[in-house]
Length: 136
Image 1: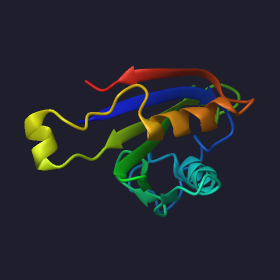
Image 2: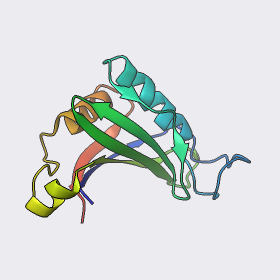
Image 3: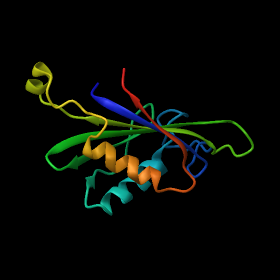
Image 4: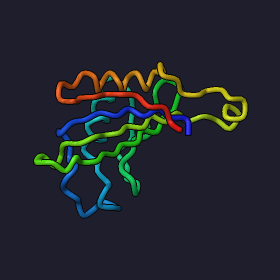
């Protein structure tokens, strides 16, 4: 994968109530994906409606000439506030087969989409312990 992971902690989003439409009982992130989509729209960045996978939720995003796949999932700490926990947003940058073969188009720590998502998260007073991880 050609991705970077942004991790943070908050109690703002659902990590406790399993909805009937969830593919798996761990498919949290629908509300976070919808919230993130609205924050991207405020910056004139188009994102698809949130979609569900067996691990969580995703958004397809176009930013400039690049396409991205933003993956969202979280895990509860299991404490008194069952919605308190750690969230992961994976920012995956799409690349052509040619780019893959030639090693071009790799996501970097200063990728424009990664910077936008990081800024959105940093601006939230109730998001803590924001950190970046490299895929792999």
